[in-house]
Image 1 (cartoon, rainbow, N blue to C red):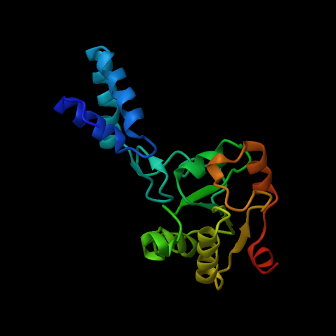
Image 2 (cartoon, rainbow, N blue to C red; image 1 turned 90 degrees about the vertical axis):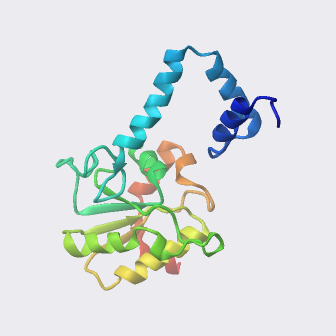
Length: 205
């Protein structure tokens, strides 16, 4: 699309670079900002500037944080001996919304996917193993997508920690194969977490 305006073209290009935003949607959003007041646009811009400058990732679990430790890791009322392993922050937030889990998390930052060039070294798997070795961890819950890539990642983690003195469980597969956690309703996701099973049994069945 050529909007006969260099500035408009640049704004649409930047907006459409966001995931899930096509050129038409980008144009609609840019035109909305163009009609907004200067103060509203300034507030909009500053919110992202502040986000980039002041938000980081928790050094323990890699969740979004504003200090070294996120609110979950620094909450002493949560069970520190139970870790739920998730693909990304969106899955963490989905599980939190169920209000059925009171332990801690570990955000891998993705799942193993050779087709996309993502290997174990690209994820926070080594950091997970470090937590198991250096903290008193009794259970690791695998809450990764029910996909081939998710199962590959589950098995890789299983192989890496099978000699550790830690219980490894998998969330219930009542969730349809291929479904992403962030799109599962809270009730189903909460029940799948509560009805988790030992990983070895689930893997071999």
